[in-house]
Structures are given as C-alpha cells and as structure tokens.
Length: 307
Ligand SMILES: [Mn+2]
Image 1 (cartoon, rainbow, N blue to C red):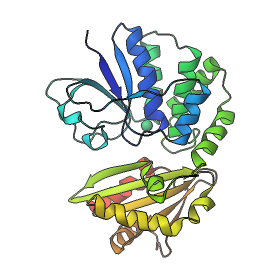
Image 2: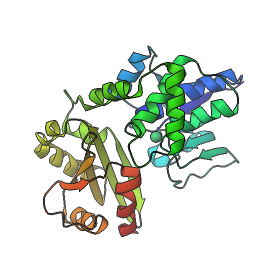
Image 3: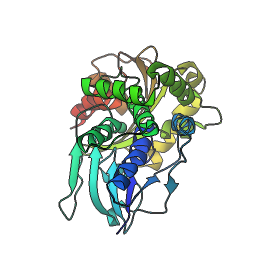
C-alpha cells in the first residue's frame, strides 16, 4: 500500500500542523498509511502546542513531487509545499476560498466555511465514528483556538464553538487558560528578524492583474512590534521587490484589544486601503478598529477594489 503524505501550507500555523498530524492518525485508524509532513519552520505558538502534548513535530521532506498527497488547510499551488506540481493530489480538506486548483483525476475535496480546518477534521472523526484520544482532541482544540483567536474572530461559527467545547471536555483542557498560553507563546518574537516577523504568517494572492503579498502578526504585545517599525517597513520594501509584488500589506493584529494596525508602504497600498476600508488612513500604520481577520475582513474589500 502506498503511503500518503499529509501536508499543510507553507508558513505553517497551528491549525495546519495539528490538522495534518491528527488527520494522519485518522487515516492510520482507517487502515491507510499516512504521514504528516512539515511545510516550513514551526512558529512559537505551534511549538508550544506540540510540546504541551508531548508530540514530536512532523518530519520535513524534501519535496512533494511524485508523492500521493493530501492537502489540509489550503487548496492552492501558491500556498503548497515545494514539488506540488508534480505530486498526485488525492484529497483536500480546507476552509479557505477555492483558488484554482487543477487536478488530473477526480479527488475528495472538502471545504467548509468555518473557522478552522481542525474543526472539519473533528467532524470527520465523529462522522466516521472514530473515537478521539485526549491528545488528538487537545491538538484539534488548539487548532480551533488559534485560527479563531479563541472563538472571537468573525470567522468563528457556532459549529466551531460547539466542537471546541466538546474537544475541551474530551481533552480536559480549559479553553481560556490554554488560549492565553498559546497567545503569549505566539507573541514572543525574541530573536526574530523583521523579515521573519513579516513572513511568518504570509500569503500571496492574485487580484485582477495584480499580485499581492499579505503578512499578519497576531500578538498580545503590539508595542514590541512598534519598536521595530523602521526595520519592518524596510523588510516589507525588500520583500515586495524580491517577490515581484505589485502590493504588499502587513497587519499587526492586537488580539486583546481586537484591532489591527495595517502598514502601507507605498502610494498604491495607501490608495487601495483608503478605498477598501472607507477611511482616510492618514498615518502609517492605519488603525482598523474591530478588524482582526485577514481572511474575512481585510482581504475581501482589498480584492474587491483590485478586481
Ligand atoms: Mn486554518
């Protein structure tokens, strides 16, 4: 029997990593061979989560080429690990907008407009009547907490909440307590360069004829980032050139005060942001009260202006 590789997106976050780990356990339970693979360096939050449950981090592989691959938490080549063009995609489980995945064969493709891939994985266990163990439940719970900012992001659905409470019961974990620990771990940026900070949670999008890059840093301590402002702006400038982008955005998301600081490094970015958020942005960064989600609140108005 051939082994499946289960891969999350590049610039991995907690949701993508725990989804790949727990889904590989599910596949193994179903008698299929599957291994989770790591699509990049773990962020500090994910490191904390894996340590907390004493789980080894997934192995890194050189390439997905010539492998049978299951994609979790993404469904586009843009965000996939290297070698995907030459891989055989078997299955996709995701909660992002569909963006141009082309396959040679019919595949299992599951996407739901909910707050996290982890919640979809939990649903699959329930549907297939596979019981969770405490660790798997705890891992998926952390994936939900991470993607939904502890069930507060506008991406959160009642389904995420219901599943999170069930997983908390099974894993015997206090949701708020572990969320605080995760967010503190995530906010520890010591030893990170400005380029690492803007690239850690970074995605590329096509909009009309434009290519844009959009980095986000969710934190409980924005002040620590403001101190690195000059270096961050320089790093954004360099990345824009290096990656051949038409526009680049970077948002610091204040998890506790529920607002964002959006860096606008050029006239193009300023014009688009002013129209998108219907605000005279004026200063740099532009302050966006109540806005915390790139996927649901920042990106859609920007893409609308550009297309
Ligand atoms: Mn996700």
